Image (cartoon, rainbow, N blue to C red; front, top):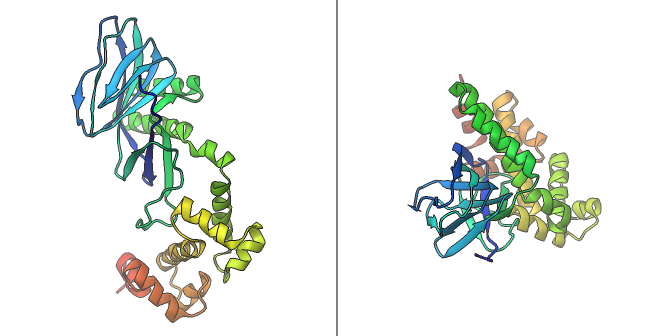
Amino acid sequence: MSNKAMYMQFITPPLPFLLECGRSDYKPGDTHPNRHHIGIFDMIILRSGTLYIGEEELQWSMKPGEMLMLRPDAWHYSVRPCEEETSFYWLHIQTAESWRETEAVDLMHVDGERGAASPYIYQFPKYGPIPHPETIYGLLDTMLEASSEPQSNAFWKQQTAFTELLRLLDMRLFADQSSPAVTLAEQTESYLKNNYRLPVTNEMLSDALHFHHNYISRCMKQVYGMTPQEYLLRYRFDQAKLLLLRTDWPIARIAEQVGFEHAAYFTRRFTEHIGLSPRDYRKRYVQGQQ
């Protein structure tokens, strides 16, 4: 059995989504299929018995209440036949975003080239016990029961239950309570969102959060991949885009509304960041603008 601790990490949004799910019941002597590079994630959650399964050089003896996430780009196989009646849920999962497998709990890494203002790190153990087993079993049964309903009902019931399953597995729910860096970064994020119209300085952050601005910046860089000022700039642009689309305000008023003192500077930085000037952005996305 593998003793190596591995973790699956996804950069979101969007979240991974469910393709299909099922439940398999094995008798003694049955084995899990051998598969190569199936192109989708295969999550297994054991309900009873023992499942002997491997992926590349790693092998596990899964017990009830444990889960395993098999990669889409690897070989997974049966290590040996079941020795008792064994039952497990399986979920085939796809993602449209980047993912990685890591040997360390890493809730801080963010791809700094992403355009989103606050990408979220979704991470859970590749193998290990599930939290709240009875709740998760109930969600899995809901997904299976929905399979017999009309497709429109089944889709929403399954995806809703699957999203709740992902939430229960999210390591950030536990890390946020114990990681000072994550806690401070999220406090900084909240402050920036509530005060983005103001000329926020490092000194203001230090006074509000009671930490030196260098430490605040380091925590933000670890958790969100950007400094507070970089985060603030991106958030201001997000708000500016909403105002460009939802109002007919002149550019100067929008610049002032989102915290820029000078409209010309706002226009230059917006164009550098978005690839369009504020005026061209409005023309492209607002129906009827010429």
